[in-house]
Length: 317
Image (cartoon, rainbow, N blue to C red):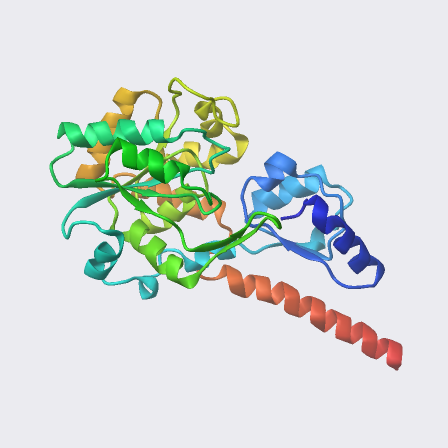
């Protein structure tokens, strides 16, 4: 993350001591939401050319040659068939029935959408109505940065039949440090691969679903109760960083409960219905194909090390 107050002193010391500093953008919204940098990095990795242009526009002091399109290494681990459990083993692990159609609901951080169980209850009502068929199950994947039991308890109060999965992440709230463990990577890849639809607020999950061609329904209406962090869920859909999703129709907006029902029916009946838009999104958004970004990032680091060695050798000679 390029701008975190607690790492600023470390970056300053590194720069003063001649140590290279590198940032590789992990999220697609950092440039549009907080693009002005307060440190001169030795090298910067961005997702695509458009992101590079916007970063340089906001930071004219950056030398263009220090900014490289590397894609996003996060997606190197998504959608890989070598990182899948056998379907029966996966279903046993999450407690799902052998042949059910799964609706995935990735929960937000509690401070982003307070009482998000309101929307979970709405989806559960649609499932219980029978309009989606009698073989549909709902699985809520808790947010990795939610270390409380409040959402789980709220879901249990709605129905004990709603499946709940807690991500196997290391989350250290004190140091704002989290990462996904390999066991969770397997489970999450299985969810994206074996589910029939994904429902939630606009987020990076949309890109992960695009990689696996899992249809995405974004909630864009507000229910009675506490507002979201941005005031309205519709504002997330209309955010600048989400433009590529909107223009490529790589997710569908449920702007009313009735529209949510319609989109659930479409997705349950045809998992591939938005795959063309998802393919177009990946072409535009990821300047490097999934699976190749880590190598590009390694090349940046290797070039800095090589250049450093060359300068030291010249100084010695």
